[in-house]
Length: 219
Image (cartoon, rainbow, N blue to C red; front, side):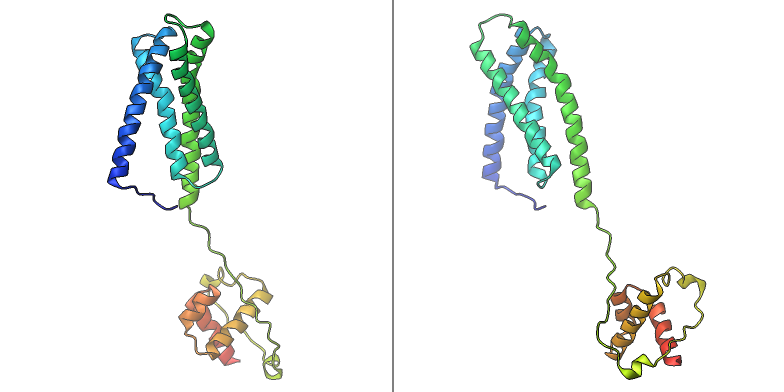
């Protein structure tokens, strides 16, 4: 995910105009909440819930790549914008005085719904960020040599030497896979590869490569 940077002029415009817009919206929504029957401090906090949800959802939208979490944030963003626009319009269109009980009910329902939505948003955003920063498990590629064996190599019999117990984890592959890896080791060694380079290529330790080459030489 690439970091998006804006110039100082753009940042000043964004913050300045955003603060002015939120201030105007705050005034209208606070008055609507007071007319819906909320107390003084409840009316002062109610606009922060509505427009604060817009800010939180916008942050998630712009900081995540496309996926379920980002799509949920978009849904939450447009829902909060709809509530804010409807509240500002109701403040202007409704007559002075207490509002209709239906409008008051909507005002009362917004805070608990917003709390649930914000909690869910925080969880899906945390999971999405955890998936971005998680390191994928390395895949072990087993090279297979499809070249036909020469008559001389087909007559070779590899007699493995007893290996210490510490190598049991490394050599627990099936017999046919281990034989393919040993054949690959002999090929790379013949091409001039170092033991460490061979070990990195076949995803085994350098000690294992050395033992396999020693067993080949002994045979």
